[in-house]
Length: 175
Image 1 (cartoon, rainbow, N blue to C red):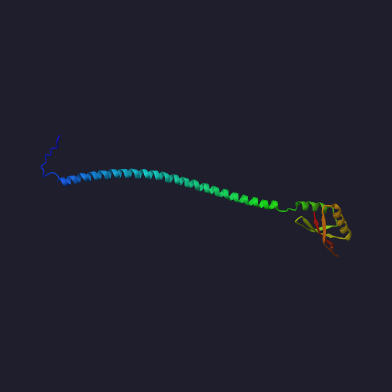
Image 2 (spheres, rainbow, N blue to C red):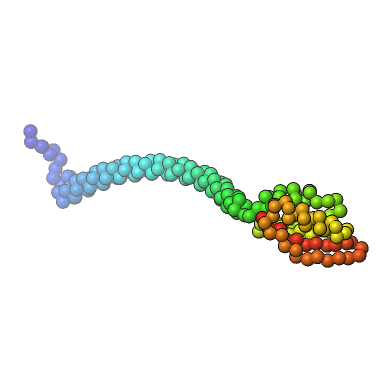
């Protein structure tokens, strides 16, 4: 069926304006569709990234707590390593336990007149200073040390006499 225009030609729109009007309507429809598509994409991207931001914040908190736990563990390991190093130094050190035990047993055999004034344990050697009241105690002590076979080397470092103290004897004993 043919379109019949009942309006007189003078009342109708100008054909150039009608053509421009239809082009503007098409452009507005296309722009509206583009606006809707961009809006939907924007909203989708917003929700997608907001979820990623929430996940990232949760991961950040997890990493922070993990780091603080690892820092405490690292500190404990550092202290443990330091203790192990110190224990190794102590265990590697030359201890004088054997020398002390040997010296105590030898010292207990001396007569009651020999009094120990000073004793030093250095590198497997024992340096002892005795005060004796008379020379017979000195002879007895030296004979006892020689006969005991506890020490392979006995050195007389110093022998002095004072009228008020008696004899002062410094000995170096080596195993």
